[in-house]
Image (tube, rainbow, N blue to C red):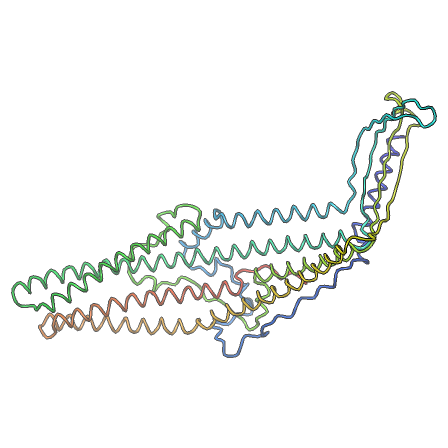
Amino acid sequence: MRMQKTLLSAAALLVLAGCSTLGLDRWTKLAPAYVRPAAPVPAQWPASAPTGTPATPAAKEAAALPWRQLVLDDRPRQLVDRALANNRDLRAAMLNVSRAQALLNASTASRWPAVSAGLNASRAPSTTTGQQTTTLTAGLSVTAWEIDLFGRLSNLDDAARAQWLGTEAGRRSAELSLITQVLATYLTLVSDEQQFQLAERTLATRDETLRLTRLKAGAGTASDLDLRSAETLTAQARASRAQLTRQRDQDRNALAWLLGETVPENLLPPVGDATALIDAAWLAEVPVGASSQVLLSRPDVVQAEQLLIAANANIGAARAALFPRLTLTSSAGSVSDDLAGLFKSGSFAWSLAGQFAATIFDGGRNRANLEATRLARDVAVAQYERSVQTAFRETMDALAGLTTWRDQVAAQRDQLTAERERSRLVQLRRDRGAASDLEWLDAQRSLFATEQATIQTRLAELQNRLALYKALGGEQAPLPAP
């Protein structure tokens, strides 16, 4: 019977806690009603903005394009998978999400009473006999449990939940950044690898040309000008090869750093045609759609909004601190003056005490805290609006390059075709004695420069496509309700 009374008392406390936790306090929450700030950018892309391939009915937003569908080559796909598994920055972002969730759980738990069980003993002189008396108590107790009358705890809970959601959005932002960094670094490595192979072949050709020119100069059939020109072109090719060797090694180091491990040899760019970067399909087209509202789902914008929601909830907690607090302290269990009688019939006792306290004077601390939370909310609004504007600017820059880079790549390809044909014709004329060595060397120099420029332009076009994918937010999660 004593145990039943103890358990019933504990159950009563938990029911009272549930009333507070499950929403009885919601009507007094003092946080301002949250309204998502109007985006300080046009709702539609400007009419002059090139949107490239329009989104299909099934994929009206860029969020409909997962990164695996963006990447058309298996090697970079595997590299991204390895980076997502091993990258330390992303691992830290994931741990921050777990930490924020733990803090949210702690905040939610603070709204429930902390029930403790214990055995207490005390000895004091009796007020009537003056003799020392011993008091033993065993049971359950709740100490200073705050009843959330004005929503202080629930507002802190809302702020912690928003912080958690913001941290999760930060993790997705870090993941998107990592994906695009790995792809951009890999494409740069492919570009440098192709240019290195081009420089190797060019250097071999020019070494042979220099050897023949020296023989001609020794025989008196080539001038010093021909010889110096051949030496200059050979030195340029040697310098270019050294530069590209350094760039290629640095690209491999950067890729290994992003992956968090050594890059496997089978995932490095294949050695082959120097125009592989130009001709191969690396990335799919990025659907853009017509509305700029897609930017509100960008991970960094979602993170900024969740921080704003948290700041808004903190205002409610600061307002509630201006009002009185009601706390309850209770205990239920057995009381006796000796251990043998502690669990005998008639030893059950309980107590319940409440305190309703209001701050009379605190030097203005609570009001200063309220003003600080309001200012923090205003700062969060400005930061949210800035994040939206940054997203719009980055998207517009990428859209501006969408068609211009394509046009430039097409022009470079036409120029490369023309330079190859020109080099072939000059070679034929030189073989027949109708063209000088200087004409042939000039054609070779122009062809080499055009091949390099074409590879670099194609790389820039692909990187701009990556920038557009990242600016639109990549593969997005649903936009949280305001």
